[in-house]
Length: 240
Length: 240
DNA sequence: CAATCAAATAATTTCGATATTTAATTGACA
DNA sequence: TGTCAATTAAATATCGAAATTATTTGATTG
Image (cartoon, rainbow over all chains, first blue to last red; front, side):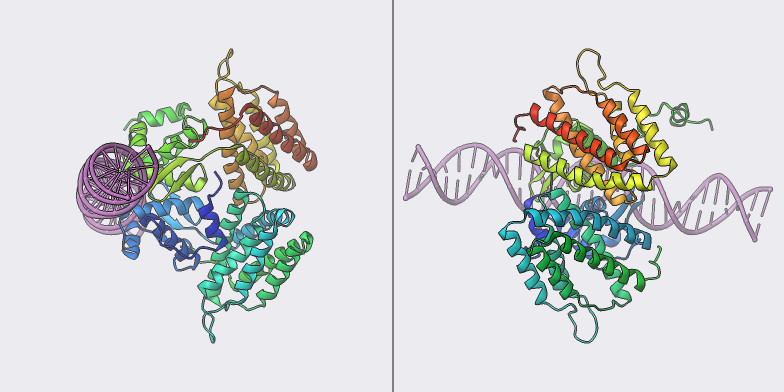
């Protein structure tokens, strides 16, 4: 079955990080976060014992979270050999961006064709919120602002949210996660600045004007540019 | 030391789909199979205790398998409320088919553009194998032939296998699973026959002739037709 | 009679420990 | 000194039971 409403609300960024109902879900969220921020680097071995200590829970919740993440593609699993953070490489990033463009092109076109007023309003709202938070949480040096990250994700998913397929939306969200991880890995090395807000505004305006071709061009260019910057700033990813 | 039985069966080529390395993976495969065949119907509650009895393993492998399946979309999970087989509905099937057409259209076009000789050969081989097994394992009444199901799946994935994106390929495989489940659900009610082999042959020929537009038309029509048959044969899916 | 609440029951989730498998180390032998 | 086998150590996977949370049952009250 396609992702349920709870998942969709979470994707839309409209829910605050509410306390998860089970330890397994809580560990899943935290582990996912730690992988996306690069706090757990690509290829890192994920030993049960170490994670037990890190998250202060027992065996079972850890393994349940790891099993879910492995189906998400953020963690790799090999029978009898345990879990690792998914590897990262230039080739992988290129494949990822290509796939993302294919899927989001469809999703955006459909969204623009089918989106109703509430979709349009959600989009405007997402952009507004994104425009009000700083890219970096510090003034002098760059440091990741979790609010910006969350709202940025929400904006991009708002664009696609009316595509009419929960499957496609979920896949886009998954690829979004993967791309976010690469962005974070690049930031560690020093992330070159650019005016992303203008790009987002242009997309939002093209989408609300129902100009599908323009919106798609802008979105594709946005992704290609980001990928280019990441590829420039990183010669090669560490191989564990 | 003389080779053990396992080695001998392997050499003789008599080994069935080799047993998974861990109990969790084995249960995952069996559960997945039971859901795809409809042996575990949509909406069915998946109680730990019942599954423990069914598959004769402990608690942990069951839960690990369920967690993986929930990320695959074959099972739904709600914190503190356990697991269920994913629901099925006409609306869901329509959304599924639509998404499948979107994604496979891209995958097939890319496959045809990029596929090398070994892709072409794999495709011809897949078709040949599919053509040599019967649709039904019984002559007089219809009964699912697991070999045909497996080879049918393999053929469709062979078509897309050169698309150049493991992500896209994985998504197509996932949607394939979902569609297979609907097909099985319809078969229970009595599945109308048609000459699927010719359709598959036409696709194979168009693909090897590198005629992307024709191949895509054939594939889309193939899916639409299947969906139509399923929707006709089922008034509504049971709601648990 | 319907609604509410509390107790009892059932199911899910989690823990700690054990069994199995893999990886690392040691030591014998060439 | 290098290789291989045997041994030890470490890690993974699994089990069974305890703790937590949901659901049902049944009594009580408005």
